View 1 (cartoon, rainbow, N blue to C red):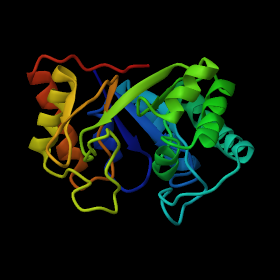
View 2 (view 1 turned 180 degrees about the vertical axis):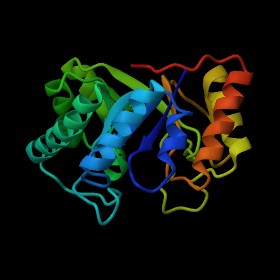
View 3 (view 1 turned 90 degrees about the horizontal axis):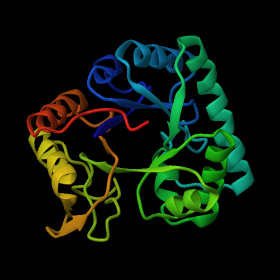
Length: 242
């Protein structure tokens, strides 16, 4: 099982996280990060043998990429390719290869239901010949399948789920899991049983290729370490999906 994290966002202890995760989603400058942080992250990935993923977003540094935007598909596709170019420059210097694409924040949430923007993201991934990491059963998943783009499914150990399998918005109480033991228990259950307990107590089915622990969650390093230990103790092999 893969363990991924959103990094290079200049809000957490990236050096420590690179020693824990197997895949790193590197911010590409539109919501956080820049040439220096991208290069540093690419080098850390190389040193720790961590798979590199691009983590593009809307143009929204002020809102950390968490503000919804009505961007036209062609513009969104171009924006994503611009971010991929920036990360590619850093990856080339560090002698690593970008292995996949995972959208960030509001864009990630929007393309769960917005077919036009989802199509733009999938087309950008196809242009760059990259697979996509995202929520399964979404408009993005459908667009990727339609365009022949390989799609990997992720689940979140530090985010609460609704009964329909969607994520509880960060604006709502209880949306973020902060207890490392709870996160570890959820992670093992997701992998072994394919289920997660929703915020209302019901069981939700999840299919996954990767588990995400956010790098900006309070206590992210301790949580990631605890999740990794829990998975290993359960006999679950950790390795990058791409």
